[in-house]
Length: 218
Image 1 (cartoon, rainbow, N blue to C red):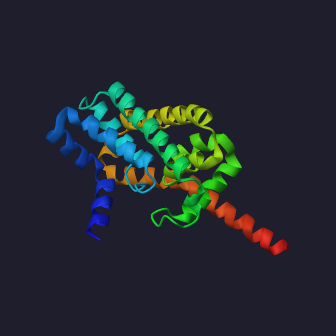
Image 2 (cartoon, one colour):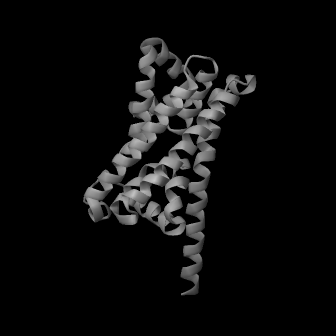
Image 3 (cartoon, rainbow, N blue to C red):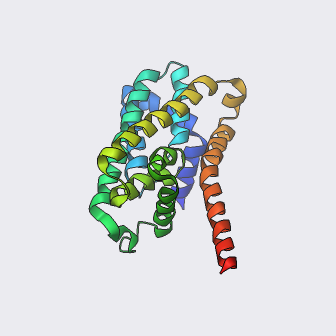
C-alpha cells in the first residue's frame, strides 16, 4: 500500500512536491508536467495521476514567477490534446474487445459508464468529460472504439483541452496565492478534487434513480 500513500501524498501536497521538482530540474519541469498530463489523459491505466489539481498548482507557481504562464498553457494544453489523441487511437485499434473483459486492466464499469455518458451528451461529452476525473481518461478511448470519427473528435478534443487547461491554470494563477488559499493549500486541492467528482457522482446517482424507476414500472 506504500504506492497508494505516495500517490495520496502527491495529491495533497502538490505545492511542496512541485517546489522540489523546480529546485531539482529547473526548466525540465515543463517536460515533467507535459509527461504527467499526457499520461493522465492518454492511457486508461493511469487515471489516478493528478490533472485538475496539477494545473491549479502549476498556475500558482506561475503567479510567483517560477514558471511562465504562457509556456505552461502551451505545454499542458498540447499534452492534453496529444494524450487524448493517443487514447482515441488505442481505443480504435482495440475496438469492441475492450468491453469483453479480455483486458483485465480495463474496468468494464468505467467503460460502460463512459459509454452511457456518450449516449446522453453526444459529441459534447468530449468537452464535458475533460472536467471529470476518470471519465476524462475513458472518454477518448470510448470515442476511438466507434462513438465518433477522428476528424470530429479532434475539434472537440482541442476545444476541451484549451478550456480545461485555461480554467485550472487561470484559477491557480489568480487565486492560488491568496493568503487563505496558500495557507490551506491541501484543503484547496481536496476541494478541487471534490468539485471535479461532483458531475460524475450526479450522473451516477441519476442513472441509479432512473434504473430504479424503470425496474419499478416493469
